[in-house]
Image (cartoon, rainbow, N blue to C red; front, side, top):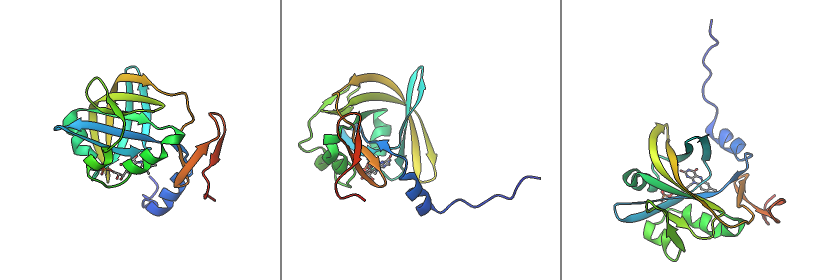
Length: 177
Ligand SMILES: Cc1cc2nc3c(=O)[nH]c(=O)nc-3n(C[C@H](O)[C@H](O)[C@H](O)COP(=O)(O)O)c2cc1C
């Protein structure tokens, strides 16, 4: 006999727990319909090496999602510790033109914006999109790999940023418990 189905865990408790999973921070971007769009993402994962494939999980109502779907490609810029302001900017709900105003960028071969000063950037071709509850999983085949600066990473932990004191030593950003 199979055990009784247990109800899903409380989302707030789940979210708090997942905050203990330290991640890097990226900005996922796309150019579709003649406009740029982008958002801050830490749900980014390398899923296969051959061919190189990544996954990003985007909120279903993210403004960037339809632009990315139209573009068929997306960029991922991995942020350095000194790019926290970019992470904050791209996590705000702003018209795309304001998000990108004054941001130094260049283009991947398929046209996706890549943020200057990154630690590394990828451009990917969308190979699958799968709705899962309030998010959409986007699988991308990597078509462009661009090494960036050899600098410390921006790290997200317990709902806040951590700063690196050099590439091999991390500490919580000031003001965090
Ligand atoms: C550190 C950090 C990580 C985030 N990770 C994600 C993520 O993985 N997926 C997502 O959909 N939103 C994520 N967000 C929230 C989006 O960046 C935010 O909702 C943004 O305003 C969406 O922009 P858009 O609606 O213009 O696309 C994250 C925010 C922060 C600060």
